[in-house]
Length: 447
Length: 119
Image 1: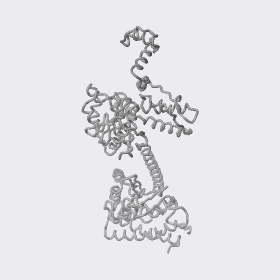
Image 2: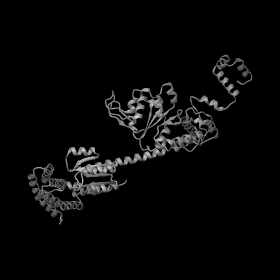
Image 3: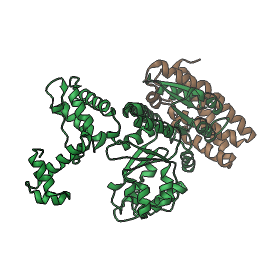
Image 4: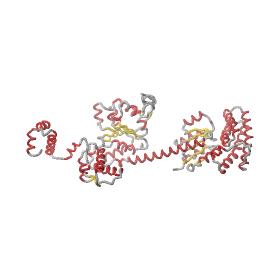
């Protein structure tokens, strides 16, 4: 671990030397002793990890020194060690941002040890968090997570790049499973807010009566069950990004409150009086057509325009051509890596089967299909027999077969006859065609 | 170091900070015996000039050192000097206490010089 630099600012030569000696007993501590406040300030470029500051210095008061330190770098913890047992001074110093205040007595050295231990742990945690945030940033580097080379997805890349450069509100639309949250995360973790929180809220998952307190927080006692103060999602996302998924499901009453918060950039917690300024980037998503919802009166028009910002419409997987194969390979590789399985290839026939399927569940469904295939295969490749679709909408596969109209007619009539126990009269009625047409096709062995 | 029964100090608290190793202990004693007369001198001058601020500051600096060197009988008098000087009142009491402090500290410093052979 990097050495922990401590400044002792103390004009009492004995006390200063003694603290220096004591704290230097830990070889990880690099202790510097200064006798005046100005000496301490001059040396702040050495970026101390902690300053132990005597309150009464010959050239300036501890408070003045601390203010200067905080001006230079507000992150440096300053501990005031004073010969005075004056509570009001202590309170004033703590209010000004002192990390701790204690009187020169037998406990000073132990308390300093404890503080150093605590600060070192905090620094360690901070560096771990920073590392993890970088890792997440790398993980969400958007070209690493959003795969594809189709014109449709290239268009999305170009919009994401535009979204990253500014704080504009982004509205993402797309069928279920197209990766709306992934795009939202890619925007956040590649933007200048990347080190700040990304908070995702699924609006439809929050009961109507709780949504206001979930979004804006509440004060203790503001309603039955509010036993503590709670920060809302907006405050949790302060300086970061708030992702509101399924925004189309928000009820009209809440929409007006959300509109006010977005317009004013401030909020009041439920049951509270204080106004809290917020700086949050909004990304919203929906699989509904919000413009239609506005026309139907289900969504406020003013909120719709506020939220529209930069619209990103994610294409369904079936419109992404060869991306299906690129993604299928990616999911198989990823699954094999994660589960320490040997690498698998995908046969031509399996690829054809994938390309013919409409994927109503989009990328999410493709991922599930490929993971299942990787589990089912006993050889080093995935063949068409390993690909199975369980979609509720699989019949739309039908249109991808590109048959002639006559072939389609035959298939439709055969399907109805099977469904209705070869009842020609009923099928003719349902399809609004003549019975004779069906009989003729039967005679020609077409059915 | 002798075992003088009239010893006016004890080093228990100093040991807690720097341990009992002779080197660091002697180093701290050296700092104390060399810097304290200067502080006492500043205090005496301030008494003559009735400069409460300097009296307060010198008492304030001395206080922790007296505690560390176990000069316990002088801790409360110095504390009182500090408090009276801060309030700028009762110069006579301050005078009395300062004189007592000067005398006692001369003895302690000499004892420390002798015990640790610092000349």
